[in-house]
Amino acid sequence: MFKKTSESGQLNIFTSPKSLFSGNSLKMYEDQHSWHNQFRKQVTMRIDENIFRPLYCQDNGTPNAPIRVLVAMMVLKEAEGLSDQKIFENCRFNLLVRSALGLHNADDPLPTESTYYLFRKHIHEYAKEENENLFETAFAQITKGQCAEFEVSGKRIRMDSKLLGSNIAWLSRYELIHETLRLFYNQVKQAGKLDKATQDRLDELLTLEGNKIVYTCSSEDVKTRLQELGELIYKILPLFTSSTSDYYQTLQRVFNEQYKVDEKKVVVAREKEDISAKSVQSPHDTDCHYRNKDDQKVKGFSINITESCDDDKPLNLIGHVDVRKASTSDVDFLQDDIEKAQEVFPDKIEAAHADGAYHSPDNQQYCKDKEIDLYLHAIQGAKSRYQFNFSENGELSIFDTITNEIIGSNKIITQNGNPKWRIKTEKAYRYFTQKDIDGFLIRKQIAETPIETLQFRNNVEATIFQVGYHYANAKSRYRGEIKHQMWANIRCLWVNFVRILKYIKQLCQRTLFFAKYAIKSLLSDLCYAIKSLFWAILPNNLSSSEKTQFSIS
Image (cartoon, one colour):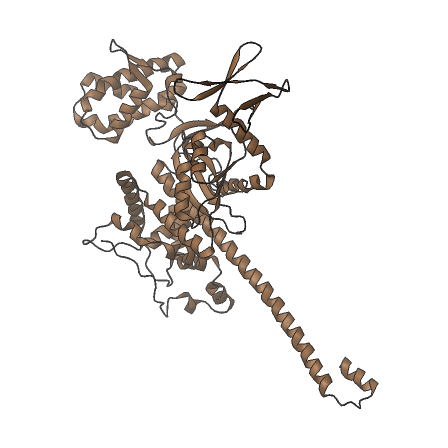
């Protein structure tokens, strides 16, 4: 049964840290600018537990464990990249960590490990059924409150992406098919639907692990086994059409991706070039895709981060983090993530900074319709030898940068109503579309953009580094898109908190400096006023030596 946690806890006279500490230790513990007190204020107490209400029964069962504590524990776990065992140890015996969670007394109960794992499981299942990741909702709610308190406007944003591998082994083609079939066969072995000959052959083929087959057999033997596995899968699949098992769905998908059946009902392995990067990479994580980006080969996911970069604000926060399959192009992130970030930042987004991978005509038009200035560092593709310019009467002039000549062009309207421009070259005719012209104008705009404006995007790469700090090899400890989205939101909560903590300390130092300066100035004025008072009440008949002696003293 869902029950909201009380926001105020009562201190125990015997078990509260105030009764355990004294002197400088108590002063440090009670310092409101210390990390544990600020974490409790900026993260733990900002968590709206009602977001997680759908995970629980409304009117039956025992009350749930404090959701604030569970979520805050996950943030602290990812903050240091700790294991589950280590985070529970810290939460039980580290008084600073307990303070950050809102457990003020040494005997305040902590949720058990089973409760912790069940909570994560319910979030995962809810995301699969309802297509809503509650951690993503909680992140937006917390960050929106932080933006309002610290006046982070979000008028100017920047974004960048990072590839992150799933926690799976790299499988060859044969290993993938072998392992997928083995998992399904182990599940249905006792069902009694397979004849003895098929079952004996499967037992023989699947006795050894796939990687051992690859290492001990020749390439021809592997090809033969690959073909035989395909024929066995084709024979097995119709026997279990009523199965709702995930392993069956995966096996069916792998077969369709790796094999084809010709008109003679013969199973044939597909050519490697015909297999999509969106195909199953591992039966243990069917969400991840393959991608080779700048010689970085990843089987996993792409993480896109959108953060503020306001002109006059020293504090910038991550407004949205989006996790999708690795095959997702950066172009596909821009519009959706701007919309999501706009829900978090209080002011209308007026400018967006990104690299050339986010460029597309649709994105340019979207930003134009939303009155957002899109600043790109570059756009993909080689620079054209031709330059374009429209005159006041709408005529297009084309300049050849190699011959340094202006070339005459003819405008042609195609069958679908779109215009084209044709020029005559040495060998043949050359045609230009509106897309070619727009690409040149964008390159020209980038070249004319001041370097100070383009530099707004630079720091987002540092944000990308901080988010994936504990995964230096670009491979996470999780599997599945939902769990990676949970991890990304949790990690971004911590990055935002660290920025807020540093910002608060800078404000305190600045305030302390001006306070010391004001006190010093006040004391100087007071000293001058006292001296002036003494000089005013001194007798006029004092000798010069006496006045000098009084002044010195």
